Amino acid sequence: MDLGHLLHLLIPSTTSVAILALFFAYLAIAGSTLPGKLVPGAVLQDGSRLHYRCNGLISLLILAGILGAASKLDIVSLTVIADRGLELLSTTFLFSFLVALVLYAVGCKSSNRCSSLKPHVSGNLLDDWWFGIQLNPQFMGIDLKFFFVRAGMMGWLFINLSIFARSVQEGTMSQSMVLFQLFCALYILDYFIHEEYMTSTWDIIAERLGFMLVFGDLVWIPFTFSIQGWWLLSNKVELRTAAVIANCFTFVIGYLVFRGANKQKHVFKKDPKAPIWGKPPRVIGGKLLASGYWGIARHCNYLGDLLLALSFSLPCGMSSPVPYFYPIYLLILLIWRERRDEARCAEKYREIWAEYRRLVPWRILPYVY
Ligand code: NDP
Image (cartoon, rainbow, N blue to C red):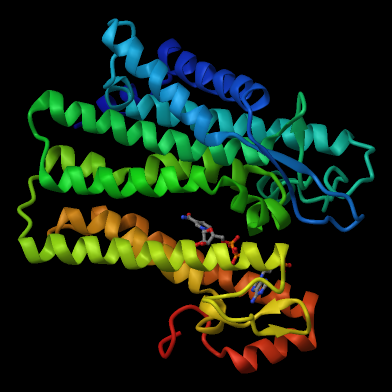
């Protein structure tokens, strides 16, 4: 493909703008009208708490149903996302860029002093636009941070499904494509089943909303986590049975560690006395959990996520590094993130964090790191 053709494919069309607008409109309407558990967020510095309506799963299933019916009636083509991948990518990128500018401008004007909306302006325009200046900006009553993560995770699934539809249409569907699709779909569905756990994650409780998060949620997650699928469309892979078994094993172990660790922390935050693996939990200073996965490594949940990321790439075999973009990126991100979280917790919990470090010396992978 020459550069001119590539640039042409990147130009946003009215169709890609319409797809994005309809997707966001649907999510906004579904998010504010469909039933869902109302989950209180973390207690903010000023003692206030935001509440999140966790109706992502039902929103996803209804949207999938609408798209399935629309394709049966020939109103929508299931391959439209795969056919227009590049222009959707550039449209979403431009949208993220503009949204971050608007967030910056609106945040600067805000005179609100509550923790979720108080502007933190450093004076460095680039920094403020990149990291954001408000913790939880809202639009028409919608918490934008929660909204964008949801859009990104759903977008990832719909891109994958569209790639799958194209592989069926082109007759290139393979065992590798099925494995990749299956693992990602299970991971994304699991995310929505446990959407309430998102309310206690670092992004939601500690990160301000700027270009970094908006771009990360809307562009990075859906478009780069699906690279393996795009790659499989034009590359054939023969997998041995042993490789398929190893791949499934990596996924299952990764899932058990990832979900188990995140669940244990979530349950612990709600009820610090709840049993962990059938025994009373070991708690440091009344605040930090040091049993279960949290007694094996201080961020076992990252280890689980890394194994899962690897399992999404293993179906592509070993002939190219391209499908391994996601696990490699995630490894770098989670090591960086673990360092930032460690610094935050050391400052917040002081001597009890030092005690936790003594008891649980490993950061992510016992005996290695
Ligand atoms: P965590 O869910 O690990 O949250 C870290 C926070 O948990 C800390 O700041 C602290 O917050 C609390 N905490 C830490 N240790 C303990 C303990 N022992 N006992 C009690 N509380 C503790 O981090 P993230 O939000 O970064 O990650 C959540 C999940 O999302 C992970 O599984 C991660 O892999 C995944 N993720 C995936 C990404 C991707 O691109 N696929 C990107 C980023 C994350 P507090 O002040 O509340 O106590």
